[in-house]
Length: 391
Image (cartoon, rainbow, N blue to C red):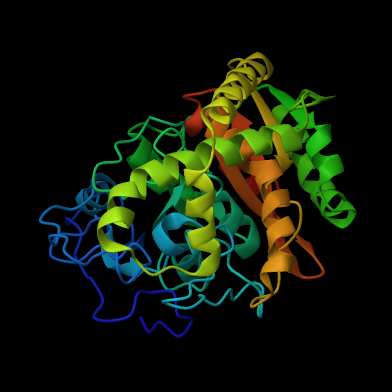
């Protein structure tokens, strides 16, 4: 299909047919340009990244898993530079158009993948999520998206950023496709039974824009109806901004260590915001990392306490709908900080999270997220499917 929204990396399209007669036969997918595809350079969203690197000879695990299940690859999609972004604007390859919110960012760093699915160019697409890079574009583009339990899936052939937070994720427009793809990627059937306890994270709804919290209430009520038991609680008693500070300490420090050798060897070109993130990561002290690791332990303990088997928690995926494109750095920086306040639990605690479409603010999509116990990924997908059927 024609890419008239700028979702795919410039140049010839990578295309690979899936195995015939698989459970995903007839579906198409795209892969974020952090995933290896045999015979195709992995661009990483930065034109200096592929320089001097061998062209991959094997597909990334995630790509091969979808191909083996019968889905066909139709191309590689634009990403924020080496996944260091959350809004989806790339100085090298451009900003993919968000057809669900014209004139607004698609969200990053899995921007092209989300934009392609939202536009109907493919049925599903692979992304990555370190600090929110599947969850945020899911919310901004009105899609189903999942950040699986950290460490559950094989990330071989996926360009790393901060390994203690990195995950593979994927998008879909409808719950049935989302469930089919999730079953293949997770390696298990999606159960018919649902969790029986729901926690509404009141601190997160209070943190979101008032019109976002209001727009999500009908979805929360439907969710409570299908779960059957609901109560309110606080997700981050230390403060959402404190959890965000911990994630903004650990993730940049790890990212700098990931790319340090490349920086030393190549002195690559970056957009200012990306270069600044790496510079700041290089300057984080051991004392700050030690504090952040302690806060990570607290966050993990809190999420484990809140989410025993059979319990899920809901929160706004993002505090606001997609911002306008091409805004100044001074405008965007506080927006990034607010997004991190609602996404930090993913990298800190590693629990699975699914963003559900179904609400709008002034016609702009906004997502409701559900989080479960570690390993309960398939149960969250079951909730997504049931909630779509309850509309």
